[in-house]
Image 1 (tube, one colour):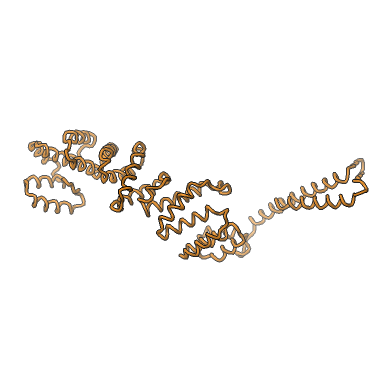
Image 2 (spheres, one colour; image 1 turned 90 degrees about the vertical axis):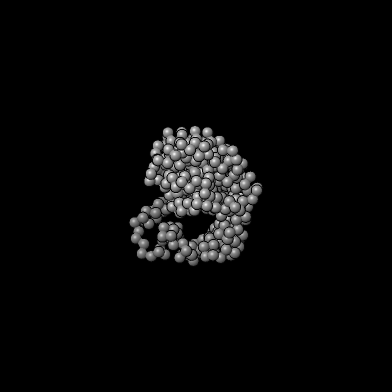
Length: 397
């Protein structure tokens, strides 16, 4: 349509110039039309303008009619050859069959005429074929208008090559840039692609991601995977990394209770390794135990309490009693209360607890341990035996 308008504008200029030259010295002239009882009289310029408008309208009607009939014809047409399909239909078939890799030559030929995407498409195939250097060269030659698409692909290559620092620099820059107007219609898909790349970076280099200005970009899936990687690679953290982790949690502290249970558990495990946040660890553990009783969560909280320099046994006992009111018939709570009684020199009450839960492995452990007295070597051997049982938790108390 745009091309048709330009053609008519050009024709109008040519006719105007020609008539102006031929009319020089003779006047503009006029046109008189008489048909039946109709009369029409106009200057030559008005007549030419009318003819151009009528012609243009006829051309538009013909163009739209031809397009509509062609579309209706293609709906009813039975294609006997892939080559008979429209190029866009051919690309659609390739996409539906997920056959882009097998049809590389065909796709490259289709996009070869696109000044915007030809290098981007070539780079994508080079990347899939493992030729990363050639892919980066194609991206360097891509059109400036396709900057975002080239950057996304470049970051993907850096992450695949384990060059997380380069990927981090480019992601930080790209995330801060406003999206180009021509991509605004698919901004959601564009942002999802950036989020996915941040997720890959977070898993690959969790401590590097911690220093990003865009920590909130991770979705739920990648957020938990990132926290898991922080735990796995905790020994690799520097002092600055640990400080950043503490600052991150403090910034999220109000929001953490609303996070999914799995995320809160992972944060609790991280807090257990940060002595500076012992108070936050206790608060989060008690919050989780109010949601549901989890032996592992209770273990983290209880062990953390007893390993303090000066454990507050009355307060710990009070929390255990509250949990017993909320969760009845939980052997682990009796197991923990036994340690409190022993630590506060209440042997009679501790002995009474040993009569509970005769078939529970934790209570069986205590019954045997109480008979061994203070023999550290025998207790160590006892721990080795019981810790080989998958239902037993290793308490460092």
